[in-house]
Image (cartoon, rainbow, N blue to C red; front, side, top):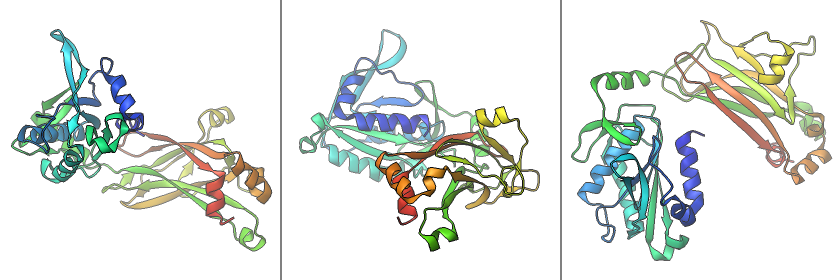
Length: 335
């Protein structure tokens, strides 16, 4: 989860109390921007609101993503320093305002950023009031640059706590960002054939790399660290960790314990768009292969946990933790 996603999640889950806690404390920054509606007492989007929205969508889409909180006035203290949330200015007719924002996404930005999400937060968390705030999540885009429309026709990016017009060299760099793959972890629970016959929960996790982007991923690599409930799959004829398609890079035992196992591809290895590459397996610990034990693990909300990092030529490192509950395992194995 990136910074903008995490911030969006925290604000939405915080509800109205979270909005109140931002007043006087929260500063605008690279990922957060506060906006006032032109007239918070009148229904619908006005011309200036549309321009403001288009500018923010463009700026965050062309940078690292961000969150817009509508219905808060932010000002500097004096002539220096960042803008700080100073006053609530809740929006009347919130449901209409939300509908208008959602409808404007396709007209405010070229090309469209399909990941934009708008969520409402009502005064006292009471939808009947139809008054409150909108939180807009704008993810960093895989197809920059994005041009702000609605009378603007300008490319923006985020710099500090401001949206600035993109210079020519910025546009060149943004177009260059398009030719990158988009990597995700591939993880599938595979039930063994003997398990189906004997009705025992025998399985393993098949781990790989998925390319959801529009360009090939060259020199793919994967680092996997077993954290809880799982272990590295070892070849029965040797002490080597199982590797599929990518080479297992030799490491010391201490390095494996600290960082996990590392698989790397060479010049002839690539992952085509919308495909995945199987890399290795993780086996469950012994107690996960017994039906009664698995039921007990589910009752205690135990999880299989592993960490991973993904790499490819020209791509930033993608690092995340995967958690699979015992209950999810039981569902997948139809127990």
